[in-house]
Image (cartoon, rainbow, N blue to C red; front, top):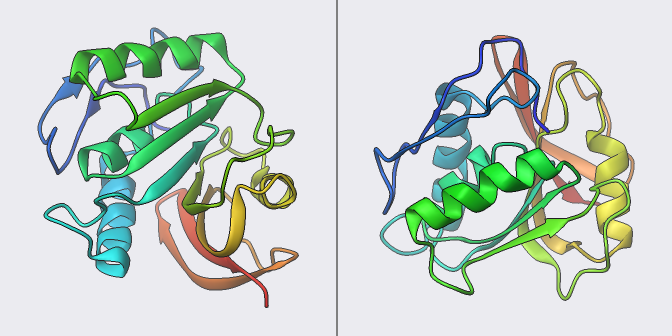
Amino acid sequence: MSRHPQGSRGLRLIAGAYKGRRLPGPPDDRIRPTTDRVREALFNLLAHRFRRGAHGLDGVRLLDAFAGTGALGLEALSRGAEVTFLDTSAEARRLVAAALKALEVPPGRARLLAADALKPPPADAPMEVVLLDPPYGQELGPPALAALAAAGWIGPETLAVVEHARPLDAVPGFTIEQSRTFGRSSLTLVVPEG
Protein backbone atom coordinates (compact mmCIF):
# COMPACT_ATOMS: atom_id res chain seq x y z
CA MET A 1 0.00 0.00 0.00
CA SER A 2 1.31 3.37 -0.92
CA ARG A 3 0.78 6.17 1.58
CA HIS A 4 1.64 9.75 0.75
CA PRO A 5 1.13 13.01 2.61
CA GLN A 6 -1.15 14.57 0.00
CA GLY A 7 -4.87 13.81 -0.17
CA SER A 8 -6.33 10.82 -1.93
CA ARG A 9 -7.69 11.24 -5.45
CA GLY A 10 -8.83 9.10 -8.31
CA LEU A 11 -6.19 7.96 -10.72
CA ARG A 12 -5.61 9.54 -14.13
CA LEU A 13 -3.35 7.75 -16.59
CA ILE A 14 -0.88 10.22 -18.05
CA ALA A 15 0.28 8.73 -21.35
CA GLY A 16 0.15 5.72 -23.62
CA ALA A 17 -2.73 3.59 -24.87
CA TYR A 18 -4.94 4.49 -21.89
CA LYS A 19 -3.94 8.18 -21.76
CA GLY A 20 -6.51 10.35 -20.02
CA ARG A 21 -8.51 7.43 -18.63
CA ARG A 22 -9.71 8.05 -15.10
CA LEU A 23 -10.07 5.25 -12.62
CA PRO A 24 -11.68 5.41 -9.20
CA GLY A 25 -9.36 5.91 -6.27
CA PRO A 26 -9.49 4.20 -2.91
CA PRO A 27 -12.43 4.93 -0.58
CA ASP A 28 -10.19 6.45 2.11
CA ASP A 29 -6.64 7.67 2.74
CA ARG A 30 -5.12 4.30 3.71
CA ILE A 31 -3.99 3.72 0.09
CA ARG A 32 -2.85 6.71 -1.95
CA PRO A 33 -1.59 6.85 -5.52
CA THR A 34 1.79 8.27 -6.47
CA THR A 35 1.23 11.85 -7.64
CA ASP A 36 0.94 12.65 -11.35
CA ARG A 37 4.12 14.73 -11.17
CA VAL A 38 6.22 11.90 -9.74
CA ARG A 39 4.69 9.31 -12.10
CA GLU A 40 5.32 11.51 -15.13
CA ALA A 41 8.97 12.05 -14.15
CA LEU A 42 9.47 8.35 -13.47
CA PHE A 43 7.99 7.20 -16.76
CA ASN A 44 9.87 9.82 -18.75
CA LEU A 45 13.08 8.37 -17.26
CA LEU A 46 12.02 4.81 -18.08
CA ALA A 47 10.87 5.62 -21.62
CA HIS A 48 14.15 7.40 -22.31
CA ARG A 49 16.13 4.43 -20.99
CA PHE A 50 14.22 1.66 -22.81
CA ARG A 51 12.94 3.42 -25.97
CA ARG A 52 10.79 0.47 -26.99
CA GLY A 53 7.84 0.94 -29.31
CA ALA A 54 5.40 3.80 -29.63
CA HIS A 55 5.02 4.33 -25.89
CA GLY A 56 8.60 3.63 -24.79
CA LEU A 57 8.04 0.49 -22.71
CA ASP A 58 6.58 -1.99 -25.21
CA GLY A 59 7.17 -5.52 -23.92
CA VAL A 60 9.21 -4.45 -20.88
CA ARG A 61 8.68 -6.93 -18.01
CA LEU A 62 7.89 -4.85 -14.93
CA LEU A 63 7.07 -5.60 -11.29
CA ASP A 64 4.94 -3.17 -9.29
CA ALA A 65 5.81 -4.22 -5.73
CA PHE A 66 3.70 -2.67 -2.94
CA ALA A 67 1.17 -2.03 -5.74
CA GLY A 68 -1.38 -0.14 -3.62
CA THR A 69 -3.70 1.62 -6.08
CA GLY A 70 -1.71 0.18 -8.97
CA ALA A 71 -0.90 3.69 -10.22
CA LEU A 72 2.65 2.81 -11.24
CA GLY A 73 1.86 -0.54 -12.83
CA LEU A 74 -1.21 0.79 -14.63
CA GLU A 75 0.82 3.66 -16.08
CA ALA A 76 3.42 1.11 -17.22
CA LEU A 77 0.68 -1.00 -18.84
CA SER A 78 -0.59 2.07 -20.65
CA ARG A 79 2.92 2.55 -22.02
CA GLY A 80 3.21 -1.04 -23.29
CA ALA A 81 4.82 -2.95 -20.41
CA GLU A 82 3.84 -6.40 -19.18
CA VAL A 83 3.17 -5.95 -15.46
CA THR A 84 3.05 -8.11 -12.35
CA PHE A 85 1.39 -6.43 -9.36
CA LEU A 86 2.25 -7.54 -5.79
CA ASP A 87 0.35 -6.48 -2.70
CA THR A 88 -0.70 -8.06 0.59
CA SER A 89 -3.81 -5.88 0.97
CA ALA A 90 -7.08 -7.37 -0.30
CA GLU A 91 -8.42 -3.82 -0.71
CA ALA A 92 -5.44 -2.84 -2.88
CA ARG A 93 -5.80 -5.97 -5.01
CA ARG A 94 -9.51 -5.22 -5.51
CA LEU A 95 -8.63 -1.71 -6.72
CA VAL A 96 -6.05 -3.06 -9.18
CA ALA A 97 -8.36 -5.85 -10.41
CA ALA A 98 -11.18 -3.33 -10.99
CA ALA A 99 -8.83 -1.04 -12.92
CA LEU A 100 -7.55 -3.90 -15.09
CA LYS A 101 -11.14 -4.88 -15.86
CA ALA A 102 -12.19 -1.28 -16.63
CA LEU A 103 -9.23 -0.86 -18.98
CA GLU A 104 -9.94 -4.23 -20.63
CA VAL A 105 -6.27 -5.22 -20.32
CA PRO A 106 -5.65 -8.25 -22.58
CA PRO A 107 -4.80 -11.58 -20.92
CA GLY A 108 -1.08 -12.09 -20.47
CA ARG A 109 -0.26 -8.39 -20.07
CA ALA A 110 -0.90 -8.27 -16.32
CA ARG A 111 -0.72 -10.56 -13.29
CA LEU A 112 -2.00 -9.71 -9.81
CA LEU A 113 -0.47 -11.63 -6.91
CA ALA A 114 -1.41 -11.67 -3.23
CA ALA A 115 2.16 -11.46 -2.02
CA ASP A 116 4.46 -9.47 0.23
CA ALA A 117 7.43 -7.71 -1.39
CA LEU A 118 9.38 -8.44 1.81
CA LYS A 119 8.62 -12.19 1.49
CA PRO A 120 7.97 -12.62 -2.23
CA PRO A 121 7.25 -15.91 -3.96
CA PRO A 122 9.95 -17.24 -6.30
CA ALA A 123 9.97 -15.49 -9.67
CA ASP A 124 9.64 -17.32 -12.99
CA ALA A 125 12.32 -14.99 -14.40
CA PRO A 126 13.92 -11.66 -13.45
CA MET A 127 12.05 -8.48 -14.32
CA GLU A 128 13.58 -5.73 -16.42
CA VAL A 129 12.14 -3.07 -14.10
CA VAL A 130 11.08 -3.31 -10.45
CA LEU A 131 9.11 -0.40 -8.97
CA LEU A 132 8.90 -0.13 -5.20
CA ASP A 133 6.54 2.36 -3.60
CA PRO A 134 6.22 1.07 -0.03
CA PRO A 135 3.88 2.62 2.54
CA TYR A 136 4.96 6.24 2.99
CA GLY A 137 7.65 6.84 5.58
CA GLN A 138 8.29 3.17 6.39
CA GLU A 139 11.53 2.95 4.38
CA LEU A 140 10.96 -0.64 3.29
CA GLY A 141 12.70 -0.19 -0.08
CA PRO A 142 16.16 -1.60 0.78
CA PRO A 143 14.89 -4.72 2.59
CA ALA A 144 12.35 -5.35 -0.19
CA LEU A 145 15.10 -5.05 -2.83
CA ALA A 146 17.13 -7.69 -0.99
CA ALA A 147 14.12 -10.02 -0.68
CA LEU A 148 13.12 -9.59 -4.33
CA ALA A 149 16.69 -10.25 -5.48
CA ALA A 150 16.89 -13.40 -3.34
CA ALA A 151 13.58 -14.64 -4.85
CA GLY A 152 14.80 -14.07 -8.42
CA TRP A 153 12.66 -11.04 -9.32
CA ILE A 154 15.80 -8.91 -9.68
CA GLY A 155 18.57 -10.10 -11.99
CA PRO A 156 21.91 -8.59 -13.08
CA GLU A 157 20.26 -6.34 -15.69
CA THR A 158 17.24 -5.21 -13.63
CA LEU A 159 16.64 -1.52 -13.01
CA ALA A 160 14.90 -0.92 -9.68
CA VAL A 161 13.22 2.33 -8.71
CA VAL A 162 12.44 3.08 -5.06
CA GLU A 163 10.05 5.84 -4.02
CA HIS A 164 10.87 7.04 -0.50
CA ALA A 165 10.53 9.90 1.96
CA ARG A 166 14.08 10.05 3.36
CA PRO A 167 17.29 10.07 1.30
CA LEU A 168 18.83 6.71 0.45
CA ASP A 169 22.57 7.09 0.87
CA ALA A 170 23.34 3.44 0.20
CA VAL A 171 21.43 0.30 -0.71
CA PRO A 172 23.35 -2.89 0.17
CA GLY A 173 23.98 -4.99 -2.93
CA PHE A 174 22.98 -2.19 -5.31
CA THR A 175 24.59 0.80 -7.00
CA ILE A 176 22.63 4.06 -6.96
CA GLU A 177 22.42 5.46 -10.50
CA GLN A 178 20.50 8.61 -9.69
CA SER A 179 18.06 10.16 -7.24
CA ARG A 180 15.48 12.89 -7.75
CA THR A 181 13.33 14.68 -5.20
CA PHE A 182 9.77 15.93 -5.75
CA GLY A 183 8.53 17.75 -2.67
CA ARG A 184 8.27 15.13 0.09
CA SER A 185 8.93 12.15 -2.17
CA SER A 186 12.13 11.00 -3.83
CA LEU A 187 12.86 8.47 -6.56
CA THR A 188 16.12 6.54 -6.49
CA LEU A 189 17.20 4.35 -9.42
CA VAL A 190 19.41 1.41 -8.49
CA VAL A 191 21.01 -1.54 -10.28
CA PRO A 192 22.52 -4.70 -8.78
CA GLU A 193 26.24 -4.48 -7.99
CA GLY A 194 28.65 -6.48 -10.12
